[in-house]
Length: 536
Image 1 (tube, helix red, strand yellow):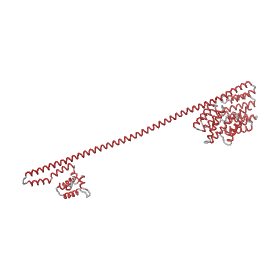
Image 2: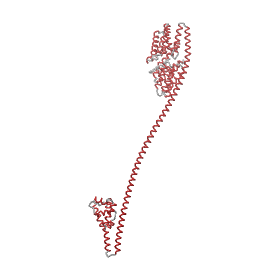
Image 3: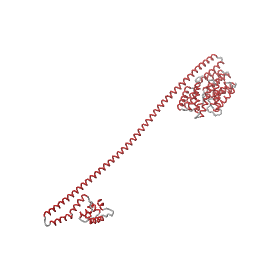
Image 4: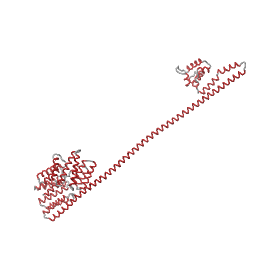
C-alpha cells in the first residue's frame, strides 16, 4: 500500500507544468512546450534555452522569467538539482518584475513556488514542500486563478497529507483540487485527480465508485492524448480487476497496454510502474520465474534511467553550448550587418555630399559664367562706346582741322587782299601825280564798302558753320541780309564795338540793329540773344 501511495503521489505532482503554456505567448516557449508534451525533452530544452538567451539579450525580464520557469519544468524530471536551480532563478526574475508588472510577477511567483514544492517532494523534503504549497493556497484561495496553480497546490497538499496518513485532510485537499479543476474545466489535471479519487474509493472498498473514477480518468486521458495519464489509468484499472475481480487475464491486458504506451516515454518511472503491476499479478499466479525476470527488467531500466539522467544533464549542457554558440554567431552576423549597414550609410552620406558639392559647384560655375558673359557684354559695350567716342573725337578733330584750314584760307585771302591794297597804295604814292590824293581816297572807300569782302566772308562763314544762314531763313523768312550779318558777327562772339567797326556804323546803331533782330526772332526779354544765336 505504501508503494501505491508513493505511486499515486508521483502521479499527482507529475503534471505540474501542464497548462502553463496558456499564459506564455512567446513563440519559442510555445514550441518548447509542444516538444515537451511529446516527451522530446532535448528539443524542448533547446527552445526554452533559446527563449532565455533572447530575453537576456533584449533585457526582457518577463520573457526571461518565463523561460527559466519552463527550463525548470523541463529539467527536474532528469535532474532535480538543475530543475531547482532554474526555478530559483525564475523566482528572482519575477521579483524584479514587481516594479513594472506586479500582477504577472505575483502569478509567476506562485507558479515557481509550486514547482519548487514539487521538486522538494521528489527530494523527500516533505515539510518544505508542504510549507510552499500552503503559501500558494493562502495567497490564491480567495482569488480567481486561471492558471491552475491553486488546484496543483491542493493536489500537492493532498498527496503530502496522505504520506502522513492523515486521510481526512488528504481527502479534503483532493476534493478542493477536483472542484478547482472542474470549475476551470481544466482537462489537463482532471485525469490525475479522478485517479486519486478512484484510489480513495478503492481504499474504502467502494467497488463501483472507484471503477467509475478510473474509467473516467482513462477516457479523459485518451481524449486529451495525455499518455502519462493513460499509463496510470490503465495500471489503476488493471489493479482494480486484480484486487476486486481476481481476473488475471483482464488485469494483464491492461498492464500490457500500459507498458506499450510507457516504453516510448522519456520518464522510465512509467514503464517501471507497469512492470511492478505485472510483478504483483505474477506473484498472485505463483509464477516466480516470471517475477524474477520482471524484477531484472526493473533493475536494468533503473540503471538505464540513471544513465539517462546523466545523459540528459550532458545533453542540456551541450544544448546550452550549442545555443550559446548559435547566439554568438548570430551576434557576429548582426555586428557584421551593423558594420555593413553603417558602411552603406557612410557611402550614401558621401554620395549625397558629393552630389551636393557638385550641385553647388555647378551653380557656382554657372554664376561665374553668367557673370563673365555679363562682363564680356559690358566690355563689348565699353569697347563699342570707346570706338564711338574715338570716332566722335576723330570727327571733331577733322572738323577742327577743317575749321583751321578755313581760317587759314581766310587769313591767306586777307593777306593777299591786304598786300594788293598796299601795292596799290605804294604805286599811287610812287606816281606822285596830282590826283594821287583822290585815288587814295577812292581806294580807301572801295575797300571800306567791302561788298565783295562780305560775299567772301559769307562763303568762309558758311564753310565753317554749315547751313547757318539756311536754318535761320527757314525758321524766320522775314530776316534781312543785314540781320544775317549781325547774326554771323554774334555767332563769332564779337563785341558791340567790334561789330560797329566791321559794319562801319556806330555802336548805338549796332544796339538798335540787335533790338530789331530780337523782335524778328520773337525772343522774350528773359532770353539771351547771343545764347540763342550760338545754339543755332
